[in-house]
Length: 190
Ligand SMILES: CC(C)(COP(=O)(O)OP(=O)(O)OC[C@H]1O[C@@H](n2cnc3c(N)ncnc32)[C@H](O)[C@@H]1OP(=O)(O)O)[C@@H](O)C(=O)NCCC(=O)NCCS
Image (cartoon, rainbow, N blue to C red; front, top):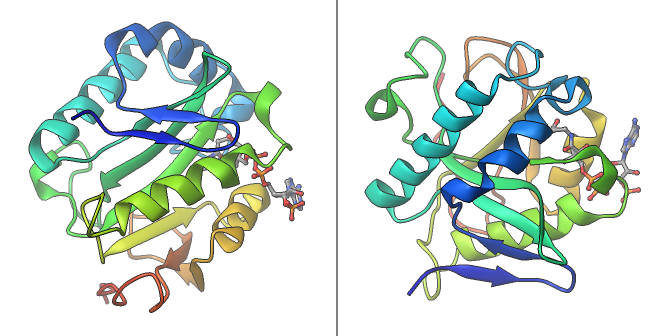
């Protein structure tokens, strides 16, 4: 049974290759990529690689990124994906983890309406559920410390703010982890 999450305004489902056009447009916007990776917009080739990696993640782990749709239109994604600890090659899927990262990226027109919070809350609920989802206990989120909108989303969905961290992606991020009421605290690397 394919996983489909429904909220008041959104449908979240496993990505399909047809989503590529929408994602390529989204990641060509420098405002969207400003706080992601090196901050530069992504080429369609890079976006396609990301999409295919997301599908591989679903095949291997039974979860992965969700495409977020509003009124039938792709407005972004909300991902679950093994995070890269500092010092590992982030392009090597097998080297990533064991913590699973939750993250989201929406097209600019969708910002400021609570939609990222709505999507992330649904994915968090599914991801930590033993009954309907994979029952993850080692979920983390990281943002650029200046990405206030994203930090606010993580606070609104109830993750615990751990402050600045060098643990992931070989850079300084702001780290969030699950609270005990979501699941057991994840191991935080030194
Ligand atoms: C981060 C992002 C997903 C937020 O999406 P969104 O749908 O606008 O988020 P929401 O509306 O659910 O919540 C945003 C919150 O941040 C607040 N916010 C936004 N910009 C802010 C700013 N500059 N300063 C303070 N608060 C800000 C909003 O007021 C809202 O909080 P509130 O509900 O308490 O008022 C969206 O901006 C985005 O896609 N950015 C580009 C990709 C990205 O950076 N992703 C995160 C990578 S870690």
